[in-house]
Image (cartoon, rainbow, N blue to C red; front, side, top):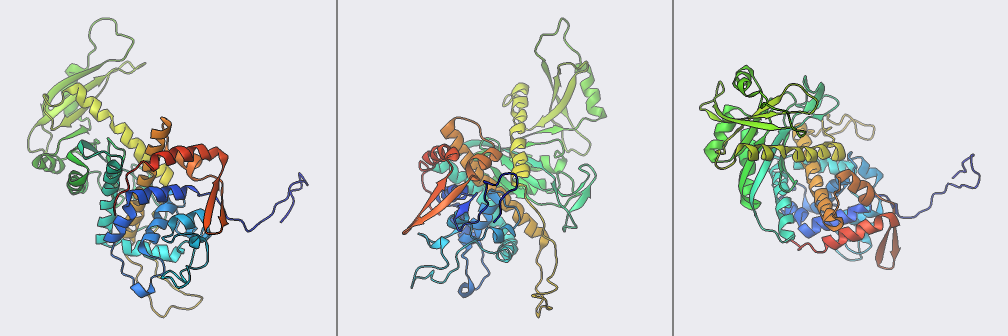
Length: 477
């Protein structure tokens, strides 16, 4: 092609070799097949396409959408650029042998004439369109809990005795007039404001609900939590508790949880009444303070304006290094002092930091791109279309993209846990993707076999991950 001028000994050439930077898609496909999650989901998805006109089966479309998202390809148009990437073609295909890398299927078979390569961007956009139905979105939500449950069973673990659900809201910034997005004064951006729930003990994100940008933090939280608790206690654990941030406690939510007998702990915002209640306890004990900062507790009963009854409140007073004044905040809970004393309650609430780290990975590593907007096609191949089709519910399509991003993170989380078990070291999703999943590789076809040659630097991580992966008990769809 050309020679750089700074060194005439260097040549740049383009050769018809099967090179890829996404060999990790093969590992992720193996994880999904071991757990049977895509086959399970495909059976519950309503496909409105005419069977005789189907080119790419539902399972292949789901594999493609999840793998592209997990590997960091956020835009559906990336499928066109990666149409013949060998690793992605092998990982997304439902066919065997070398046929995913060829132009058609085997002779005389049912797959004969089927095109190789990934589905195109318009095909994936249509997939998102019919996944946006209420029934299909419900199936996607159920798949999140099912994935976590199947991983535990594949590792030989049964249902958990107790599980803590961390419920939070997070901003998803969008650009343009996306339906339902609004400018939020606190975040100073145009956002969606979805609800997210995460299992604290396992690190799995179990549900996400897209909401408009300017809604209150607790808007719709009760119905969201109750539906999730029913799913979680049906397959993942026996008893589910809830941990909430300061923006959630209101009478509707708290009384709704208490009516169902769901234990909870939440932080509440300071106000003048709480500050007056805390003032007598904001004093250090006499004597020289120790080197380590101290923490005090005070138990009381508190009934806010609008609450139907008093609730247990715990004042937490903390010393901070280098600060003259004491720091304090309040926790409310449905647990009694005998069930969980103040010190244990604070330790339990502090574990929310782990959940916030997982949510940070969702936004910084997966970076869900919510870009659907109702734009009817104005022309087709330079001419006015004979039939104008509705663009569909753009808000629901954005929720589908968010659910797929969470499902992709769930698959990456399984790979991360297996690698941590093998190496006895902590792994972030970013490090997992950069060191293991997106590395240089070459696909070599010889006879009826495909050899995927990965770089030597990644080989040891692949061997370690594979050793744990084959130990998983295969799950039926």
